[in-house]
Image 1: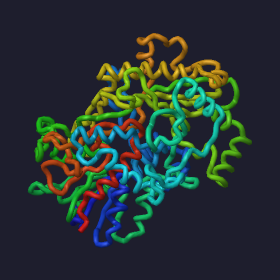
Image 2: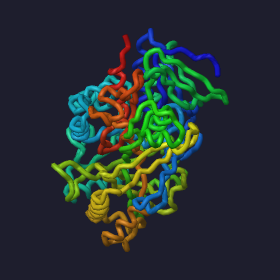
Image 3: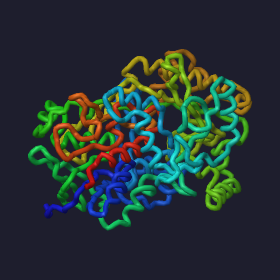
Image 4: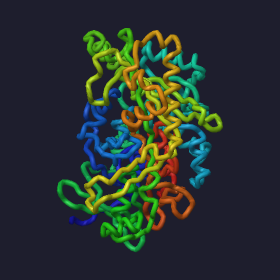
Length: 533
C-alpha cells in the first residue's frame, strides 16, 4: 500500500449530497478536500441531454445495478435498482424532477427525533441551493447553484389529462415547491438552458477549479480506517492498487442509501451479531445500520391513444424528430428537455390523514417497457401512481467481507397491509381521471394493467407483478436523538469521532415525493454542520 495521502476532509461519493459538500468545503481555501468516486467522468453526451436518462439509467458505464431480494410484494421477482456510478451519482442519470416533498415530511422528521429539521428550519437550505427561473419568493431561491426550471414542453394529451384531473376534483397547483403538493400541475426540473443540471454540473465541476479540491474517479472505497474510536481516513482501490487517504478532520460518507450502510458495516459499525458471523471486528454495535430502508413503488397505467399525440409517434417521424432537435438546440425547449414526468401531482385516497396527499401521479405522453428499450409501436400514454408514505421497511446488509460485492437489498415492499390498500385505491382514482372529458376522448383502451383487472384482488396482483421502483432508496442510516439512531441530528455517526453520513440514508422517513431535491438540501445542511475553522 502506498503512503497515505493527506487531506482535511474526505468525501466518499460525488452524488447529490457529496457534490454540494465538496463545493461548500472547498470554498474555504485553507481546507484540503478529497472526493472519491467509484465511477468515471460524466462527459458523455447522453448524460447531458435531459431526455438522455432513457439511455443512461440502466447503462453499466454509468450505473451500478443492484438486484433486490424477491418477496411477496414484488411477485417474487426481485427488482433491479440502478444507482449512479459516475461523477454526479444518481443526479446524473435520474429523471430530473425537482420536487421537495410536503412541508409535513420535514415536520415528521423533527417529531421522530431529527431535531432542527422541521420544514421552516430546512427551507433556508432549499432556497440557498436553488436558482429558480421563476424568481425569488418565500419558497424559492434565485441565487443558488442548482438551476431549476419550469416545464418547457407542451403536449396536448398532457394538457387534456390535467383538465380531466381537475374535472375529477383536484385543484390546479402552479408550484409543487410552494405552499402545497396537493393538486395537479406541471413538474419543475433540474435543468439549465439546454442541459441537465446534475449535482456535478451545478456544484462539483465549478469547485474543481479550486486547487484545494481533488476528485479521484474509479476509486472504490473499501473501508473506513478507525483508530482509537476516531475515523482517520479511508482505504480505496484504484487502478488495481490499494491506497490510503488520511483525513485530518473528518470522513464523510455520501455514498447513498445502499453503499453508506455497506461501508459502515464493512468497517465494523453495524449489528454486532451480523458482523461477528462474517468475521468482522465490531467497533460499534449499531443494530439499525442498514435498517429502515424505504422506497416508493409505482404501477404504470399505459393507454393507447386514438390520434398521434404520443412521442412514440414523433420519434418515428423524421420531420418531427428534426423539429425536436431544433427546438432543443436553439430554444432549449421541446420534448428533449423533459424529465421522467411532464405533469402529475398529489391526491388523497380515503386513507389519507389530515388532508395530506398519500398518492402521487407521474404522467408522460409516451409508453415503453422500461428506459433503455424502444418506445412502443403504437400511440402510447403513461400515467403512474405511487404511495407517498409507505409504512413498509426493508434492510441493506452485507453478505460477505468483499467490498466489491453488492450488499443484500431487501425492500420488503407491501409488508405493511396498509400500503396495499392505498395503492389499489390509487389505481382506481387514476382510472377515474382517465374517464373524465376531455381526456376520455383521446384514448381507446388501457393496455396495462388492462380492462379485465377490476377487483381488489386483481389489482393487487397487477401491482405486485408489474409495478416497480421509483428509484428513491433512503433511510438506512436514520438520524435521531435516541440511542439506536445511526447518526445524530448533526449527522455524526454515534460511537465514532470524525465520521458523518450525509446523504439520503439519514432520512428518518422517506419524503412524499422524488428524493433528489431533499438530498441536495441534506448536503447543504450537512456542510453547515462541519467545522471549517
